[in-house]
Image 1 (spheres, rainbow, N blue to C red):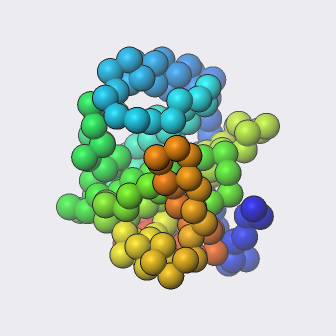
Image 2: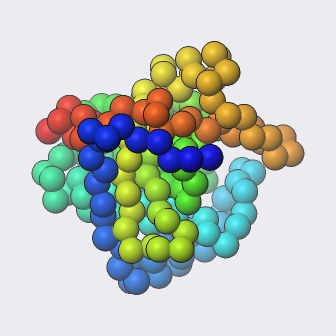
Length: 170
């Protein structure tokens, strides 16, 4: 899968520090010890928390008021962030598309880390819940099945530019 972006789209690069990676790995170990639902286990699960940590700091730096619910929780009924009474779920991955299972939050934000070059978290784009459902229903999202788990991959060219999101949030 190729990463496709509009040439006018400006991605946002957030630096990753070694201590951020260490904190993310330790927090994820704690989370994995109490989780009560079927989450895919792998050595790089920590990138989800790492993305949230860096995004939280970015929002603070931009002066965007937000709530960052606790990462370590026994379910997934809360979005990663609440901004202006809307739920935002940050999807951090090494791949080139936004992965989502069951769209239920207001918005999804796609962040990427290059697997071989982990100096930055790259904020790429976002999409509404309504748009995710429309893409799934019109077969414009790739479907990945692993056991009983179904994931949908939303291509980058179906996302709104990330800078547009921050214009709305300020």
